[in-house]
Amino acid sequence: MTNSQGSLYRRRALGYAMAALTSASLMSSTVYAQSVDLSQWSPEYIRSIAGTETFDTAGHCAEVVPLDYTGRLTYWWTGPTEASPKIEHDINNAFWEAWSKTYPNIETDAQNIDYNQLLDRLRTTLLGNAGPMVIRLQILGGVEFASKGYFQQLKPEDIGYPTADFWPGAMKSVTWDGATYGVPTNNETMALIWNADIFKRAGLDPENPPATWDDVVTYSKKIHDELGISGYGLVARQNAGNTPFRFMPQLWAFGGGALDEAEATPTYAESELDNEGAVAALQAAYDMYVRDKSVPTSALTNTQNENQAPFIAGQLAMMIAHPSEYAKMVDLAGLATGADKEIADTVVANMRYGLIPEGPARRAVVFGGSNMHFVNPEYVEGGFDEMAAKAFACFWNSPEWSTKLAWTGSNPGNLAGFKTEWMKERLDTIKFLDVTTSMLPSGIPFPVIPEATEIMNIIVPDMLQNALTERMTVEEAAADAAAKVDSLLGGGL
Image 1 (cartoon, rainbow, N blue to C red):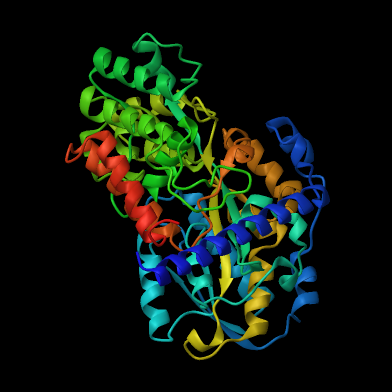
Image 2 (cartoon, rainbow, N blue to C red):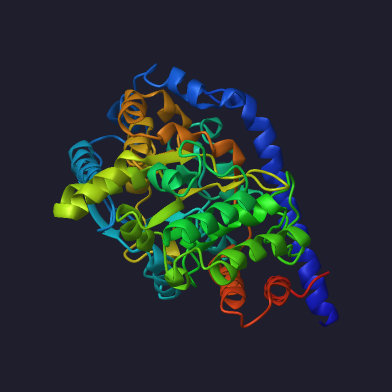
């Protein structure tokens, strides 16, 4: 590494540290001002505040942008897919109908783009100055574009909401180099799902999930040995966000990290993918896939969608997913016929949700979700309509729609959404929603650095692939991944 490269890296690392400290300061200053009490966060508290306040979405947004405003909007996001439960499609349709009625004079071009294609498509269009005005990206993606100057500075106050009404961890994900460049639309934490009937037949306690990640390995092997089916739905596909969302909680639980993102004030200076905890987590995945063969052989190419069919068929016992997985299983059971119908109904009746297992270091889950960003005008095809963008962002991120659009699989980004009648309805109608929501305090955001997308979607899955295919030993795969991260960040201090 040359002196100039080293100097560049030191400046860059300092920038990461300052951004992290700014985020930490933001977290400590906003925690006490929020409209909900995060210190009480639990299934009981969540239920106690649901339905306690009412909100007038159109009336509020009219104060931000008049309802008779005439303009145009272009918007990209990842919405419902064929794998989504029907209710998500219904709510999506209801949103667009409500939007067009509330702001009938804003001509809207909205494109629903596949999750695994959205980032690449945005990179390409921005290079040609042909981006959309507004985009909703997965929580992992925004800092890459903000750091390159593609996104405008944007904070909740710009669209009529206080920053204090958004999760501190979520605000951390839209803070770069001391500036805020987005609004959290929804926050996600997942849970462990298991089939109680399979547990019972394998001689395990049907009403209690594995408490630790070591237990997951043990349970998965026992289920495979006793019943000849897959115990745990390992996901290890390359270049797919599903992989880090399911493996990083395991890695963090053992004490590892991509960097030091699990710390209260991370510096993002050096990879921890090869520390003792990270190696132990990778070894656990190796033990399930190679040694015990207790996970699907297709795990190397699976996303979570590929776990759905074996789970509803009673051929998979455990997986990590959102509360929407229950709704999806209900849908699949409704489509089944004959003997398949009987099996599917048994699976639905025996679905259970629990906290993601602990490790020696902590209980952890990815603090996921999505953020809404405004693209800088010079990169927008046809120019940027600020008023139309603000009207749309206000409407989407209202307590009402922030809650409804997160109906089966997520949580409202706007904390006021937890007080709405719709949150109460969700808790009353969506089984296990309170379990996944109660995981939020255990959430860890991915590193808030421009390189996070490549680290999580490329380097981490490649590390898994190298170990599980035995191209490298577990230790070699971890060391290789850590070296790639350090190289990506500039070669080390």
